[in-house]
Figure 1: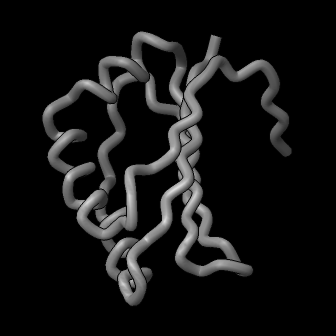
Figure 2 (figure 1 turned 135 degrees about the vertical axis):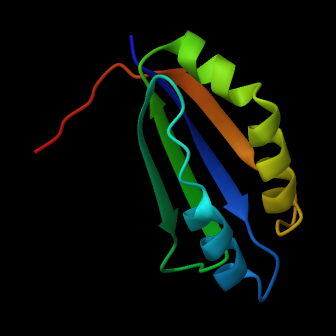
Length: 97
């Protein structure tokens, strides 16, 4: 079963462009990776929503415990008001074109 996460992040004032560049610079495609989407709210431009999809829980878990991912997260975290709110889970429905 596919597994993934959704994260809500609020960026520090004036750091919207910096976080977009940092998120766009990560081109890794770890084992089991399927997709990633990053949204910037139109209503509140400091709010970013990240979604990531993996083939299964084990692939997601291995990626989330990778030291490179941890180092990247610290760069992202420095641009945020607070820790992201994470929502991990099994993907029970996926509809694509």
